Length: 556
Image 1 (cartoon, one colour):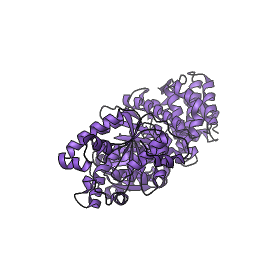
Image 2 (cartoon, rainbow, N blue to C red; image 1 turned 135 degrees about the vertical axis):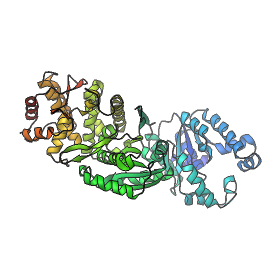
Image 3 (cartoon, helix red, strand yellow; image 1 turned 90 degrees about the vertical axis):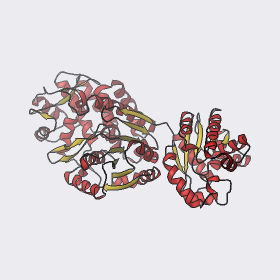
């Protein structure tokens, strides 16, 4: 139980407390503050506190040092497993574990089944200061404590990094660290995994909060080598690269970072060539991974570089924009733009893992978030009426920053895209199949070409207008009710997305369409719809109908 002094200290704290239904298990090296923080957490949460080392000593009638000396570490670990299992079976508690407990795979599985693990991460100098002069630490008694802690940290950090929550426990007062842990517990939700079950290259998409801090551990289990080259842009590097780099360090990676300018202009042959040269200058091996950290531009550029370098390097995606999270990071399409059109140069190259940390959306400008939201709307319009209805009910709140809604929408959109990609990985189905994901895109790519692929019109904004055009065209051809296009336009306008063309010449737009990579035998494939959730592909689309749609949607 928490001692009286800790309870009194905690009583001065304020703020909402998380609803705890699972045990809180603190892990980390000796000196990380597991007992001090654990007692304070227990006091704040009204739970019992237990220290597994103290419980082991009470059960054995011996000190930890004596157990090690008389019976060895293997005997101690077996007893530790039994004690932790017994304590966790008692219901929600706060448990401080010994430094080596989490290293045991069976113990980790037990903790995962009924608890929330929290790694208190502290640098070796801080740990050394806290354990100096303590003789009851058997692992420190056989050599130089600084060397031993450094060695233990290097070996254990990759496993500690698998904890549900990672908290930096440095020189802050224990009460401050306790508040940080409470805030993290309040926000914690178990990550969701969406499998992309491709027969020759299966992978998973992991969606959750705070995942960037533990990305290294997940990457270590998915990639063939603990060496990675991170590709990102200047804006994302400033916001998120330090967190990812620390995570890679924790997992034991050797890693480098290549930072490119932000924006669609980076998806050029010139930038692609420069990136390839920069990657080769780092002397990668064929098992060295490329990790894309950023939005859709970075994912497309880095993925294509991974596909081309040494005839194919392993690749992972960590998308930081809503557009990339719900669309471009899943499915393996990579590439760059040509002066003749968008994404005309590229390759299919599936990632080994996609990590979606919804916390990264907090730094995303609303305009870019709205552009990504258009792809969620698109998923509902293609084949999920309930998802589209959900969008109309929740889209505004999602874009206002409701993280639970964001995660729900990301999960649904990713699951939908995964099902389509698995059925038609390389978009070779003669009709429908993966091509359905291009709903609105024949128009959208045309609008982007007309505006120069620049900031004047973001990809998701172009898709939003393209969705309205696709349903207008479907109605003109007699496939659906004309009111649907108006309904979609009204929803897009309500969340701040464009839904009309800004007077661009219809003739120029049609000329752009004729250069589209989806042309076959001189005819452009369109994705049309018989209603919301009922999309299909067609090449029987008269040019006059396309022109009429463009004019009706605002072309000049």
